[in-house]
Length: 221
Length: 322
Image: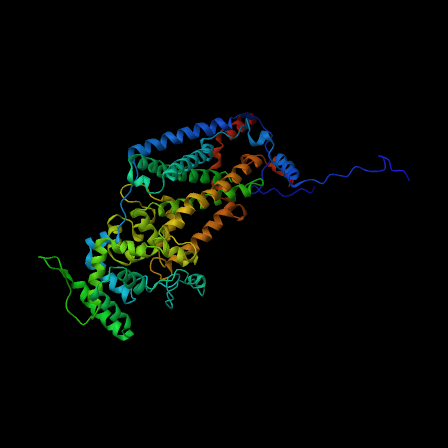
């Protein structure tokens, strides 16, 4: 038998992990969804701005925290410029939480989990909880009366859960590392997933006032 | 595909209506600049608090008798830390429990502390050799437990009425049968007032140290820290968890957490911390799972606040119907 090019089939190329990931990523988040320049007409309320304001405040907190990190944890106690940057960090945190809680309440009253958006809601709550933990470790890392009092009081709560045996709030070095590396990393990842889910699913539509539309509903998942 | 019953708190009818122009990057940029300006103004006008921490040096200088009474309680094993339970000591029955569950006990004594040795005897041993003190420490350590307890009890009785001589500032403690403990305590006070005890408690086997567990626990065992915190409205019964030194806003987001400490049984229970944590973990879980909880997920629809948020949308629907 003579082997020709017709008898030898070209091997079917197995899809790579990278190729699969790219296909899924582009399917889930095509560029026009990821970076939209249009949005539904119902997105017309000041309440929507709180999500972006939260991200902006998070940026200010990270930026001011990075400046303190460059100079080291004792710098802001010893210089006026350092104190000012610490003030940016503190007030950035205050407005961050104000915007985040406003965003949360806004989304609650929109029932923003509707239409397969439950994961968006859950990641938002997770971002809130992890942000509280991050802010808490920041208070513990101040090396002043605040951190002294907060750590000696908070230890009882953490110890009661059994967590204090592993996560010692009186250990400045441990708390500082959690504050400037581990927890911000988690918050960045969770917020990143949250934002991508918002872009993927879009902004939740208003409650339908039209029963006919509801009757025509079909499961799309 | 089979039709599925529409649940208004779970499902949506997809939007096929008009869209409007929107610039995501512009919105985020404007928000960032606006927030930056706001924060710069707040920081410039109000600054931020930075009250210095209380050190053992400052505590023992300002409230020496409180220091002495705390130090003797560390030596005789009756202080808050000495009787804390896990993760610091093995004190029986000290763990907080939720029913039969004691998570502190399960996690174990992973930061073991012997307050007599760690807070009193070992720091004294770091002082330059001094025959009388060396002899006192040796005598104390080689004594039987009942002897030690007898000396400790005598000093504990005398310490609250201790005072300082007006002429030479020397510590005067009522003479009772406290054996070597008198000298050990007066030398520990002198060590504390010189600042050497701060260093001895934070010292690490290596040059660098970042763990302040020992000095913080020692200071917190005294009354002075709590008195200062009370004067600044920072204690638990003052909702201190969400307060800040001075007139600055604190962790207001902890309002619900601190609320539970104000109400019975948590405000008086010996397991109050664990009870509050359990409640908060449960409530956090409920918040995360709101989309799945019947009734709770219907609140937005029932309250109709959404009609305010989407008022333009509903107005346009109304005008289209008209």
